[in-house]
Length: 207
Length: 207
Image 1 (cartoon, chains in turn cyan, red):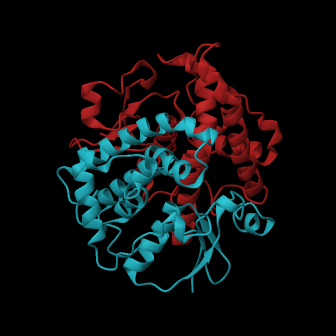
Image 2 (cartoon, rainbow over the protein chains, first blue to last red; image 1 turned 120 degrees about the vertical axis):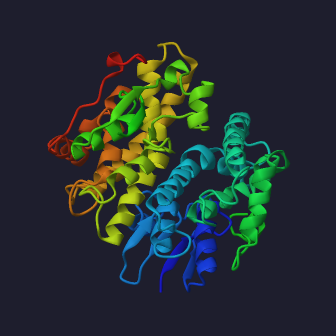
C-alpha cells in the first residue's frame, strides 16, 4: 500500500488526500509537521533531501516529492487526467500556475495568519502577498466565467491542485466573495462524489 | 508553424528555445520583454491573462502558458520525455522543484543583479535569495553525485528546465564551483547534440 507523509491541514498535502479519496484508493497516512521541524530531521531528509512534505512512498521504498508531481503519478489513467494531449497540457499549465503564481502568495498568507503569532515580523509580508494572491484569483475568476472546471471535460488534477489553497484563502485575508466564478467553481469541486473536507489548523499538531 | 513569445535572455523562455533547437524543430520567435512592460499590454493580456512569458501559440490560435507545461507539450513523444511512468513522474518532480524551490531564488537574484540599478531597493532581498538558492543547488548537487542526468535514462525535460537558470547562477552571485556535481552536469547538458547557448542580457532589449 502507498504511504503519504504530510500534514492534512497543509493544502499541498491535502491535495493528495483529496485525490486519493475521490479515487477511493487505500493508503497509509503518516503525519509529518513541517511547522514543528519534522521535515528537517536526518530520517526525513534521507527520504526527501529537499525537506518538504508531502512525500509519497511506494511499497518498495521508492519516493516521490512535489505535490503536483505526485498528483500526476496517482492520477495517470483515471478520469482526473484528460486523455487528449492538449487538455493534458492545459492541466499542467494550471498546475504550474498554482505552484508559481498562487501558492507562494495565498498559502503563505494563510500560514502567517493562522500559524504564526499575531505580532510576528513576517506579518509585514502580508500586503505584497495579498496583492499578488488577488492577481492570481482574478486570473482564475476570468478563466472560470465561461467554464465549469479549469480544463474542458470535467474535474481534473488542475482543479484539485487549485482547490487546496483557494478554498481556505479567507484564512489569509482574501475575500472570495469578490470572485463569484471562483466561488461557484469551489462549490462544484465540493459536489464531486467522494469529496472530503480539509482538516483545519486546529485539527493538527501544527495548529 | 508554432510561435513562441518571449525573451531569449530569460531562462524560462530560453528553456523553450533550447528544447526546440535540440529537437531541430522549426518555430517563429517573437520578442516580448516583460522588463519593458510588454507582457502587460491589452494585446498580450488577451493572449495570456497572467501576463507572463514564455507563451506558445499554435497555428490555429490556441495558446499555452507556463514554461514547463510548454516543455511537456513540445517534448511529448520525443527522447526528452521518458516512456516509463515512474521516470516521467520523477521528471515532473524536478520540474516542479525548479519552479518552486529554484527559480524564485536563483532567477530572481540574477534579475536583481543584472537588470536593476546598483542602488535598487530590491537588492535587500539578495541575502535571503542566495540562502534559498544555495539550498536548491545543494539538493541538486547531492542528487547528481550518483547520476549523469536528473532522471535515469538520459537528458530529459527536467535537465532542460533546471539548466536554464542554473548555468547563469553566477549572474546572481552564486558560486557554482561549490557544486562540482552540478558543474559536471552543466557540461553534459552543453554537450548534448543541438545545444544552443542562451543570449546574455546585453543581447536583448531588456539588457
